[in-house]
Amino acid sequence: MCHAHRVSARIFSLLDRPTYTYPQIDRLLGLTKGTAHRWLNGYRSGGKGYEPILRRERIDTRWATWGEFVETRLLANYRDEDDIPVQRMRRAIEVLREEIDAEYPLARGFLYLEPKGRELLLKAQAIADMPEEFAMLTRTGQIQLAPWVFEVVESADTDDNPLRDVVRLRVAPEFPDLHWDPRKRGGQPTVGDSNVLATTVAEFVTAGEPADEVAGWYHLTAEQVDQAVRYRRFHSPAA
View 1 (cartoon, rainbow, N blue to C red):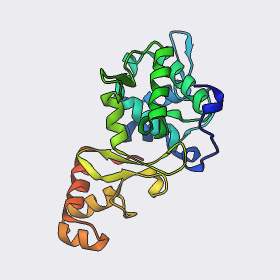
View 2 (cartoon, one colour; view 1 turned 135 degrees about the vertical axis):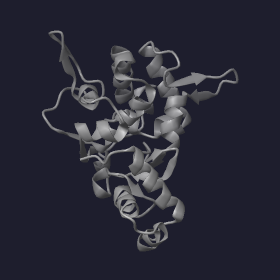
View 3 (cartoon, rainbow, N blue to C red; view 1 turned 90 degrees about the vertical axis):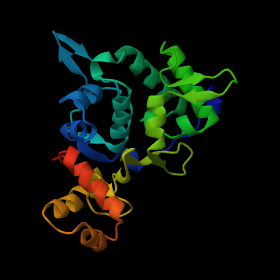
View 4 (cartoon, rainbow, N blue to C red; view 1 turned 120 degrees about the vertical axis):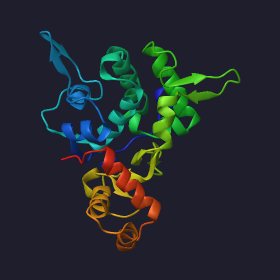
């Protein structure tokens, strides 16, 4: 795509908002300890330095932005750190940054929801020699998202700016009413459209409070309370 056809970009403060520490991301996404830091800030191994995958360069900070969290979530759905073709993935992201002239390209719904965006995904993966890693061309000429991309796209809410930035993510398909939202509770999982933490709801129930009463306190449904309890059962709260 030539420069004249790029989507015009401007600063979107939500994606730039520092929201999580690296250990928080690992815990929230179920990643091996240190994975978020390696992907976002690079690492050294065997006397050799490896550049970040999701940042242009290393940054001396303990914080990751919401946009970086979304991108890490996308990669986490793909495969484990040791199996990612690092150089190819980095190259594809570099191409996408250049094409849309914006940071956090993987956190922009435009790439997945708009035809021109999907064309850019195909272009980036071709340049990076990553056949069908992001998207694939069907026999009918349509561009279909790879399953790991589709799963995250289905879980995301986007705003209405031209790049369709991701503003909220559902935690998992089995918890459709639990969300990560950087505007609420420091990005920790909240329930429905409320401002209440999933862990708060779950702790009341596990402490012996009747689930229906807890639901009434926070104007939640019985199903939403059940999701919070099940989430707390299988996930330790991030510090």
